[in-house]
Image (cartoon, rainbow, N blue to C red):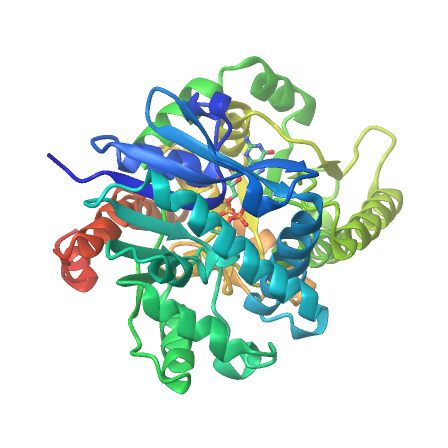
Length: 456
Ligand code: GDG
């Protein structure tokens, strides 16, 4: 009998997300751990007037797991979630020291919420459980659990980058957070660079360094099948028709300043300016569902993008062609898969990204006989394995324009061989491989990742 897996993350997927419509972490974890009994614990996404520590988790049984959720007080939502997690840690971990805000009361709130969450989980634990904690919201969670006497195996996975220690040290009391990691039996990060940075920080805080690169991925075969079917669906067919034979450049990102959207739009404008042969021959579609609207930086970014889109279209459009289409709402996962398959170019240019699953989804969705080209930022974790992508420094819009030009004019042979290379990497670093590697370590049966990879 395999041991029960207890997943702890800031957000627990909503009950309805057990359907194929869901994306991201929920799908990756569910698909990769199908054989196991699972309890998923975290915030419900709702706030209440009661103190967080007074809330008792509510447990719902869905087909594939038990979901245990707890509500946050209004005050903790602001201090823990909007404040320390998303206005302090998120920018800092993405190397953006200039955007990093810090308030002592937010840090206090962050630590207290981690303790309240650990206290709420303790009564639900069984002695043989494996606990897998996810992401920057919950760095001190393991230490809080240990302080409540829990001797079980606990692992932590950081989905976002870890910056060079000099940048992390900008955070007041940074050593405390790094020391809290000592409670974890296993620590996984996305890339060897993240592992090196975190291990340096751990050594500097006198903690035994133990971070390892275990790259996250998708389920490539089910995503490829979804894209094949979806390409014949109503919305992808409508999109294809609306393009009138023009090539499609597609971007898909949460509306977040780490994703490099202003630079990307300038890069597309530079393509139209410097390579006039693409004028009226190419259309860019950017899907950017709004996220974290409570954080001021995100509202400012949205205003900047609204203005930029207007300017690019105003300068380059024809009465029958709008070069840049921009949607700030969510698109169903299936539709997205169909759009990826239609796109001649997948444009993924974050300024810094832990992995970037959109890059892997785009590759998996292609028609192997006539694949599109991935233009990818060197600063996404995905670039580590994607030798077949056209790599760019996203800070330079002219470099993005040159990469777009190369992608749009690339012959079929080169497109196929680049795609094959990338698809091998997407298959090797799948969600299943990620979860298996992590859980083997957590169970104490570690298989060195390097060895696994060389057999792939
Ligand atoms: C964090 C790290 C790391 C996007 N728009 C829509 C939509 N999406 C889906 C994509 C993809 C997911 O959201 C985004 O994943 P990413 O990996 O690209 O980015 P983050 O959200 O920043 O995720 C990242 C990841 O964690 C996993 O470890 O790779 O580096 O930042 O699956 O398809 N899905 C739907 N409609 C949309 O409009 N249905």
